[in-house]
Image 1: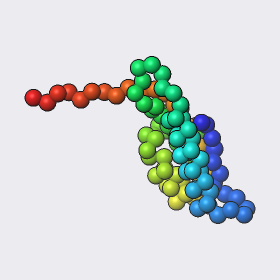
Image 2: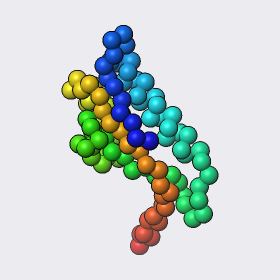
Image 3: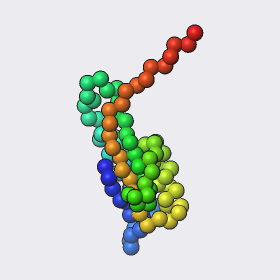
Image 4: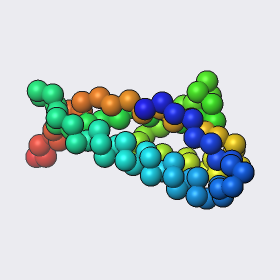
Length: 98
């Protein structure tokens, strides 16, 4: 998913646009998690980028997307860019404690 979300509209309030963007992202993550895992994978992992523009975006953890969207709204940005790439994840075993 590579998308620019607008936070300005002539008829819609910014708070409503923020919630719509969060909902779109949650739906995308949920849809991707339902897909069949490849052999040897334990879960679906996500590489995420967030920023005001695609050129200024930086890597973030997928669980922080909501926080960054709220910050973009507080900074009164006109739009923001989100990129989410799906990859298979492998759980790491914890070392046995002595």
